[in-house]
Length: 227
Length: 166
Image (cartoon, rainbow over all chains, first blue to last red; front, side, top):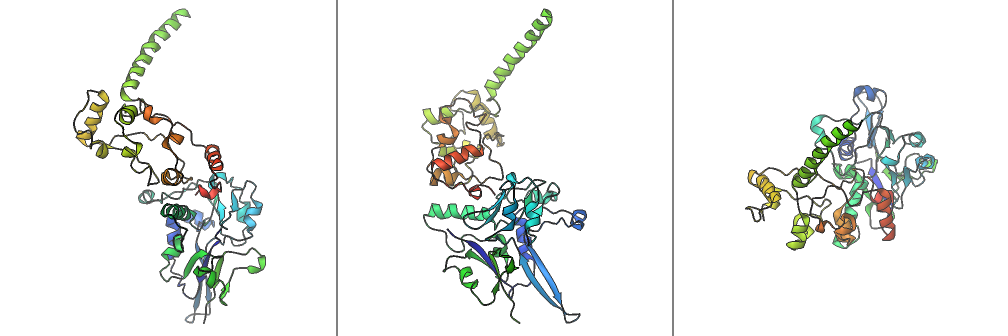
């Protein structure tokens, strides 16, 4: 059984935001508007954490794209009273929207704050309604959502591989953020398969995971910047 | 009281008869009184001849005038249903078929996965549609998660939520 994971090379990331946009479009993530946004209710299943170092004009910006880390020991799944969120056999931390009762325990439990609550009924500009991704359901008001590693792409890739009578190959299944990255800073694949690039990169001396001391064992690795 | 009942029955009975007649003529909830039996049994057609993507696509597709025109450019019978169809074909108007089998958007249902990979017969989910003389106006089987999961379990197919949910 594969263990899907991601490696993000911070040396290559320019913080352009393409992954954020691709995610927003791919997953039909609603735009909440300025009032809701001011209350901290913006939904970004992929976000970029930016830090500024130094003082003008010698400012150094650092960017860190942050999807759901699909932890090996996810704190969010342990608190869900209805098993709307759980870790499946392939290591993906699932969020099943029709099962979610909107208690937001998981949102509080997540140390990486990657879970978002739909406070309002999702709305888009009229032109955008025609362009929603039909492969992803539109979440109703009152449920928690998050990055799914674009699991709908996995469902399709598995089906295609079965029709072709072969196993899944590296690159058959990649999330929208990885696919869209213009500097190829993101890698995706099976962390347990030694042939996959991610399993080699995660052993790099530059590899680290966010807040590793928590013991959550995220399946998203970063490659630290080299000055 | 009795007179009221008689009047009520006197009004309702003809109304229901008229409704039943119209309903039978125009194919119930469908715009044309499509006869599956005529196509499948009497003319030896296969489901895939009209539902062309049922084997290779996620959605099976409901045929419309472009496809019907292949056989129905001119009247081949004297049936009212064919005359109704020809008016759509000749005017090049879309037939407003009502989709009967609907899967919720949060579930990934692919015909290819079931028909090609699972080798399921159409009748397993849709019933003996080929024997129906009236158009399909209600699903043979209501799509419920229990029903899906029972079949998955019986056939040793994954019942992980992410096998279908999205």
